[in-house]
Image (cartoon, rainbow, N blue to C red; front, side, top):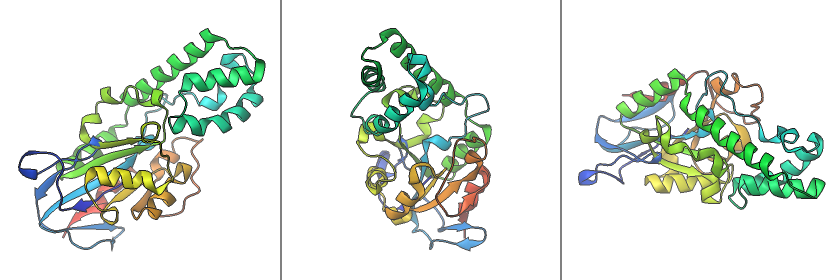
Amino acid sequence: MLMQVNSKCAHHVENRSIVGQPSAAMTYRTRPFSLEFAGRRISSAIPRWSKLYYLISSRHSSLKSGTQPTRASRLGGALGLEDAAFRVEWKTTRPRIMLGHLSFHEALTDISRTLIGSVDAVAVARVCEERVREKAIAFAAIDEDVVALVSQLRGRGVSLAVISNCFAEDVRSWSTWPLACEFQCSVFSCVAGLTKPDPEIYLKATRELGVEPDAAVFIGDGGDGELVGAGMAGLRAFRADWFSSRWSHVRSSDRGVGLANPREVLSLVTTV
């Protein structure tokens, strides 16, 4: 997640804008702000005309129990392929899907041909349709604490954006997500041709928001080295521990300040 302050505008009447995800930020007249965590100030006061920006990793949107999509690396059996061999091929193919060089359907087709010399087209289509369906369900089942957090941040004039390492199929239902309209900027790896932790993907988001990296905060679960990448791009990075504690498969090697629950995010935004 990223929060940022800047005096530029990007969207709205009289240059007073909302930019976030898929592309919204808000400028507003306010008292000075500071960013604090655990009583420690981490930025100076914000100018009178300002924007506050918040970038979030899409994966830690905190899905409710029971809505976790099937991990793609475990789909070998559904395609009639040997599981271990599929996982090996998947590991080398996945980055190309993330970058938008291959669709999920094309990747599964290529892996099948490589492993057994043929393709079960019906099975491939079924697996692809199921992934889209599971992701749509996940988007619709957002934790109530996250919904409340987004509402409170937007109420405080915080602009929101999302950065996601994802397949095109994963975000096909993005526009139908109940909270999508609250985000002013969305940077999806499969569209941008960039993946976390490449610093450029974070800078792309800040450029779209019209803000400077050092005025922004990124919050994510730490997967794919995303917190390190955010720091390299000049952003302040925090780890969403509430997500990794819920899903056993999420393991972060990134060190840094952790946030125990969505409510702690609000402690980063305090008036002086």
